[in-house]
Image (cartoon, rainbow, N blue to C red):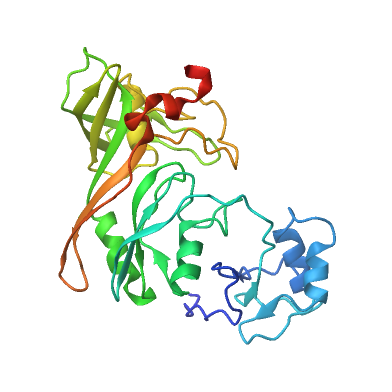
Length: 318
């Protein structure tokens, strides 16, 4: 049996709140040198980029010493390097902190800001911004909100405690309450509990409901009506990807501003902040697994379509 080894700390510092890339060489004899492997692994990079990184000493081992292209391949060895960070469109909304102590930071995330680095959103993420603004380089996310969803997100200050807070979400010991603005349908009987089986396939933008035992459950309540719109309270009892958006669409009242449900209209372009998805993670309630404190946290954000649909919708709907 292969012996498990501990993951070494990175010898490279963060850049703009973003960790360096960590690569562990696979247990295989398919490559003769480190350069052979990295060129294949990073095949999406422009020609010559990987070789230039190696020649410039930008790839290092766990000891911090540069690794050359012709360095012999050693299975299990760790390598570190910084990814290229191209300019990103700034998300021009504040990232408020609603709670901070020695263990936790709970942020009130705006629409359009990703929670953690992913894809083309790296420095313009809640995690990277909080690390920079609060000078907390070890900060980590306990869970995620979709980039288009606003509201409360929990981050952990101490890496050793992150697992305890992640288990809160995995074991459904966090009460999450959302608000959404969607069409009002007088024929829709609410409150109601929606249960279905949701499948989210990698590389496919939208999730879908399929036959089978339910893996997603949401309590849907109508809080208030204003003309053709309703304000809904959504209480998920599970945490499937896009669960609330899928369930509201299935009920015939898709959330305003949703580019995926009921019809995929394409991704929201970076820099287009005109019509945020009208979905807000309003409340988080849980017992702190480290301190035992009862937390009852509330977002201070509002959903613009409810305050003024005309302002949210823009000129074409007036």
